[in-house]
Image 1 (spheres, helix red, strand yellow):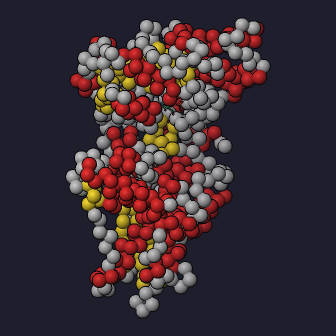
Image 2 (cartoon, chains in turn brown, blue):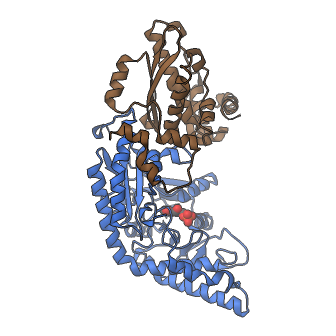
Image 3 (cartoon, helix red, strand yellow):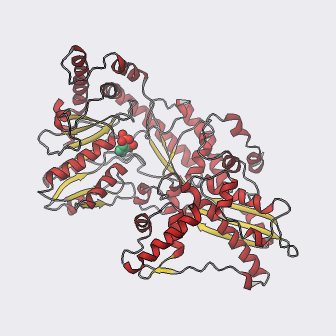
Length: 225
Length: 391
Ligand SMILES: Cc1ncc(COP(=O)(O)O)c(C=O)c1O
């Protein structure tokens, strides 16, 4: 039996389950142990690189999360007809990508414009919730999707539609952007002190502190409100 | 729960049945307060005294030098804050190192906020502090050095005796966190030349929530918990007699079995390390090949995140632990693996297997039968393909 069949059956494991307790929701468990729409192996990834309509990759191994997403898109209807992925990361990162791929392709495929409206909260909700400090995992899926759609726009000569998530420099000395602060909030830093501990924002550029505090409130409400 | 598949003995151990038996009478039969003058109180006092005698023998110190506390963390807080407070007129500089347990690091950070200055020594690729560096950073206002005996994540055993000598030459007091060392390494505080030593019972097949602090006679210590003056005025509060009795019993058993157990575990440890590195490509040992605790194995599997492996192993009833960011509260990967100079990529994929009294060769073989395929599965799902040469 090859690995793909093993994963689909998840046979060995299910026969041997001894632990009744599980850290995440049952839906996360399902998508972690039996993920959907993944690409298994480097060769399959290479093939997909060549034939996909849009490919996006975000994160890095140094950050502990990296995700690659391949999309097939019908030009006429702008529906996502297929979505494949690979993920390096924890259980919630794997489950989030798997769930996102299902959301994108169910019911005949989601329209691009609709897909771009998906928020990290929507993925987390479909997974019956993620622990707060794992929330950033669902954000990564969202970002991979955007990157893949942008790639599709570029490949099809629709450069005007490319979404640029331009980052704005907040801390002028350390060149810390609003994205860095967003990232810190997502990783669980919910007040100025912890955000500063993570990013060093405002250590030298004291003038930016009020704006940082405002951004923290904004992102806290956006993601956790 | 199959104890043979429990590879998380550095987190905590099962309480030995003999320890449970020893503790039993002190919950609801001999439940007196050791401070009371009636028979029931005197009986509790007697149990407390013999536990202290047992521990004093274990550490080769005198009875009054053994203070019972509520955990390893409490002992560490008491030693570092207690010495710092008592000595702050003399100086406000403390030396420790980067791979300490959070109980030490967070206590030091707290003291920094109170106006103390702390030097955090670097470690080498195996996790050792350098004696030369230690000498270099010593100052006239240095009051305390706190360096752990053995590391909880990678098992590195520090040259404690040599460190103690450097401290003595510089007339600086020395505390060591021996929570992982007790039961495996030499605990003779006279031979080692230690001023303060923290340890607990929960890694020794004893109960959780009880610890001891050894304070060498005459060494300054400002108490943190004030009250009825128990524990020679150093730690007030009615003594937790059943847990203290349990701790003493656990230490007695571990001490008696130490030599045989160290030999048995060392052999299994080396077998597990050898086989993991052989059967799983792109795996790296964290820590020193031999100068590590007999029960510690810590390996990084490149291109997979530790948590996924941990959760999949859990489905087979196998317990391990990870230094991966995703299981930590801060989302930062292990500060210990990073301190070795390993890149973040390596820190994310580390797993710790800590062996113990109930570990068997069969249990290890079961682990070895499952892990290679588990690693392969998550590597196949991963878009990251780093080679060892890139690390
Ligand atoms: C090296 C080390 N120091 C301190 C502690 C803290 O001990 P406790 O959990 O008893 O507070 C532990 C165990 O968690 C440890 O391994």
